[in-house]
Amino acid sequence: MLNEEQTWLEQARQGDKIAFGKLIEAYQRPVYNLAYRMLNNSGEAEEAAQEAFIRAYTRLHTYKPNHKFSTWMLSITSNYCIDLIRKRRALLLSIDEPLPPHPALMSDKQKGPEAQIMLSEQQEMVQSLLQELQPDYRQAVVLRYWHELSYEEIADMMDTTVSAIKSRLFRARRQLAEIGVANGVSPVPMTLERAAV
Image (cartoon, rainbow, N blue to C red):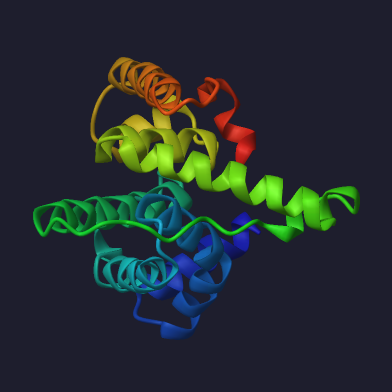
């Protein structure tokens, strides 16, 4: 896959739109998932994913082959989503759409109606807690716990240091626990990575 990806990248950098289309197919799911985690709205996430791929295509000349393409692509996506969140906050718009359950990750036992309701409620709770975080904390949490990126990759994407990322994640977990307790919810930050996908 990596050799194939490198071939597609080289062809795309020479203007081959079909090769870039293959990159889109390979990364559309993680890009959409990241946008959805950041924006909490499926329609906005689809538009953000499309915009991220457009930006990637127009900036392919800036991509450095010694970096992972996935990290570069997710960086473009998260930065675009941060811009949208800032604009949204400036317009004082609310974010209400809940996070739907992800059936692909459920066992047969979990697919029963009661289990789906519990999972849905848990995911909605985690998503609403995420929305309380400031954008750079939310970005770090999503990249670490849902996309399982290393501290180094997140620091590179967010143009900061590893220690700054660790500090943001620590503060974000503490803030999530405080928000949860204030809302009568048991502390959840340490189980964040498995609560919803």
